[in-house]
Image (spheres, helix red, strand yellow):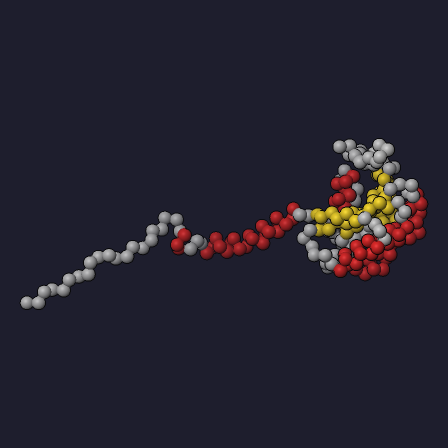
Length: 212
């Protein structure tokens, strides 16, 4: 498969040969300029909580190893980053929502949230949002409110679940201490291999000597 194409046969993305131009928009003024420059192209935006796997998804879709910088530190994406792909489509990386530890909650409310919804409202060519969610995490109030507001703008939302492979590792990690304790105690006596059940003493009772 060499990429996605529209009804006219134009290819949007070509595997391993994608030409990507990044437009970083950290302020409303720069964002407006970026929207003007890409106003004739379809947009797809990618949102999600910090560290949910947005960067990994973008790198996978565009066949690039480090186009979007993945990091364990919350708040790596600090602007609306538009990526012009093959001069055909725009993939937009949005700043991450606050995760469970609320590390970037203040920054989200003060700067990132207004910027994100400015993009959602003003981008007339925005076709859908890919919302990335770590399958291990519970849905927070930030996520519910965010998705409800996005839905009010009539934007289709596609849910992308990530990191399901980590579930197996966590189950094994949690099971390891219990297994170790069981090995240290050893198997119960009744389950030991080779152990024979005790036999009851079936010897006849001793006879009393006869009286003279």
